[in-house]
Image 1 (cartoon, rainbow, N blue to C red):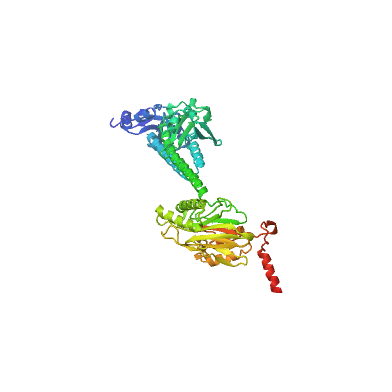
Image 2: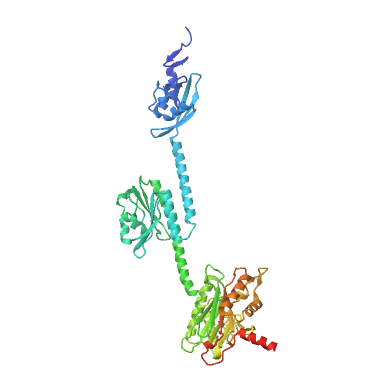
Length: 559
């Protein structure tokens, strides 16, 4: 007999080479292969790679009974592929036909691929978390909001609970605690008790954190309010040159891995920067508030028998201070004069406000030694020149006012480069005070020409800064309000109290500029109130009100 006779091994019928040669060929393959019969899915052969990958695979058994649930599922559904996990390894299988009576399952170990994909997903999640943390933490400079955001982000992404500890102040530290599913709580703790948490005092002092595995979570103090926890992590919140606080993270179960600690420290660094910036901003706001309290126009005292009303609007509402100012200094002794001042420092904003404060303090000192208005301007001019600040000058009007007989008010005015005050008489006539002078702080030889005016009952003197007349607006938005409109507006206030007069002019200017102010505007009104029979003290005849004068004129015209 010539040729090869059929050889039968189990249910595998082959012709040609012996089955040993077939096994040798499959064992030499890199892929794990299960040779199965198409009729009943019996495993006919398991090559060496398959036996190494899945030791539980045995030839002669049904493929559905193999220790791979994914393979059984594929057989049940007729799927051509499957994935499974066996002994910590991730497997993938693909079916290939091997003739009409046989087929093979080709198995592949995809563990490294799965781990790489998981690592990539984890890195993407970390990047997304850190990006979201950066966005939310940088969205506000409010210190309390930054602390709450830090706790919220930590609980949502890093732990089951978080406590943010602030550095000790006056031997106490404030804390903010958030436990998943609960409300944020806040409190404080004595500095001496911070050492009850392992590593906390050191972190707040600027030392590196200790690993989480070195901290016994069971020893966490009750004031942390975390209950039963399985792991604790303490990490610093780095600030600007000093720690901004500490972040305590807790997990109910499990531990913090090295990757978890690294991520927590990266997050804490960003949170610490935001908290530090918010704290610095709050310090600046508090400092600015203290400075503003001293630089804002004062509450005016009302001298007996005189109405004083002031108004101030800064070009920058956020600062509420600027280069325009007014002030009133009460008499230093019985029978002394009340000193009033309204000025405009070159520029706007903080620098102008600082110079404004110096000018006001100088005027106050000169008032204490009873310097007349003209002398005040001369001394102030010399002081500014000796200060050596170039391109810093002031326009100023200073007045000394006192009561005169019959309810009248007498003012001695002096100006230095400032618009002359306007006087509203009882008949509605608006006059300009006959005063003039050179800029204060600009030249050594200053010229001051003072003047004295008297206000009858019902008459008013208005001191104002050039921001009022130079306010741009109107139909074109670029036209100045101008002195002519101011005179007309003031004339329309005949008979009004000083408060109503100032408020009306301010409203008219605001309407003119459509609510926007580009320069500081200051006004100070001095009015001799209309006297009545009940207010007479010196026995003189009462002055008539503007309305009475108007009525008398009408009667005379009719007669």
